Length: 306
Image 1 (cartoon, rainbow, N blue to C red):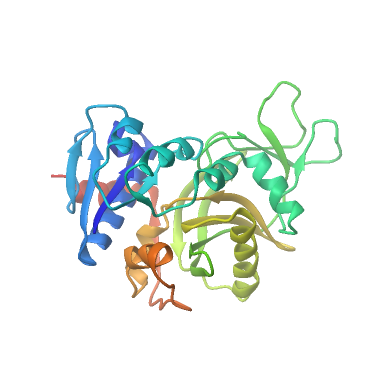
Image 2: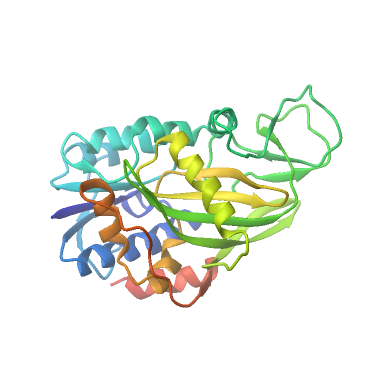
């Protein structure tokens, strides 16, 4: 098959952390699809990786997707942009990820949390500014990626348009999984390396992370996936204290795939395709452990530049 991997930061030349992580994810996925015998094409603002065929982006990202020449494709972009980009790609290629509707719901963190809570999924609760009460609280953009703009505060500020959630003590973990119409397949439980000194900053991941509560955490992640009707690869961020509570849902590949590719015997690309066109296995085989930091991703990116 001819597979389109459309990573927004690499395609548009968006600099900073998004570009570094985007390059790492794109390199990992392209290599996996190529090892599975598929032809890979990806848009780029100039940089190239060690797998697949680069196509210089000469128009808008959405316009490129609407004219894409591929059998199937996967969009990796800021969550609030994914729905429109997926709709454009679906004009010419089968979508290997979640539907625009599901991706749009995940992008709206407030609405996503409310839907999950109504479906019985444990979450970090959204707080209105009139609720008051003792802190601490977490402020974060209603629409946003990763930990950008996330802050822990003792009191709710009056003039701030960020959403407010309860702060829960616990381990900051994530579940990487692949979902089809009839099966949710957890891949790994991961520990998120975060700095929490007022602001919250993602620094890397440990893949996998051993926990006696793994099945409990996987169960909550499955509930979230079914409640949001996700497809393909997704990442569920949680804080695990009294309960595993969902913090964010990423309806797209996440940086954890860099570690997953090193410890999972199965090919990530094969699982993504089987979620769309075939049948997922009951489980995957994980061997070893991988810890990586954001700084190390810069080295991964540089190694694939030509």
